[in-house]
Image (tube, rainbow, N blue to C red; front, side, top):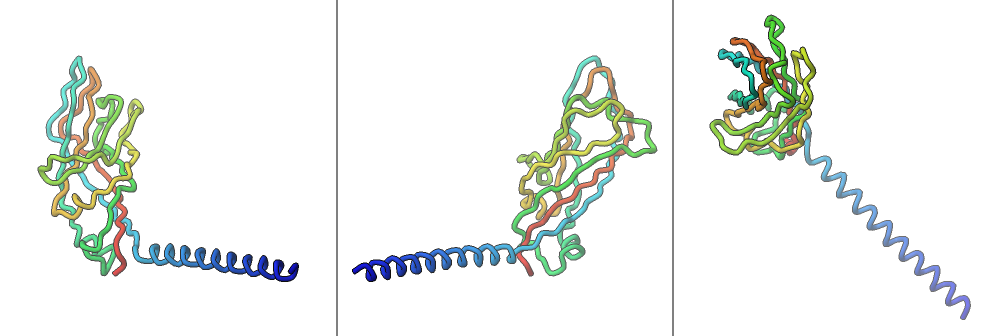
Length: 196
């Protein structure tokens, strides 16, 4: 009787161990399959924009919304950076990095910007802006901003022919911006797509 109980106990252990190994193996296989279905591609953009109008130096703060529209050139960029990937293969597009600086041929700095700047993306003439980057605490005399990017999917905007960016901030009292100030913006997007 003792031997039968020992044999039954050992048999149960083998069955449980085999069952656990089988479950673990299945989970690993699924994870590997999922990871190999997609590729990540980084796409850089550089855009220059000259603001022809001055921002007047006033005794009070006022809200500013600078808009800029640009061609996404999505097909061209996919051909260059992700050969074989098509627009319909894109699963997600997120901003990775964004900075903007004033052209160094200009004596202007960013002292006219109050505490924070927010960047929104939208479709051309769209009405559904989405926050993609922000910066708090701009140092006196600064001529560039390195933004903190927001992990948000902008695929629907990027897949259109044009995208619209909005730079929103409040002016600082008694500070203005010269006319014809040129801003250079660098953006890097990460495209996650199905493997071709």
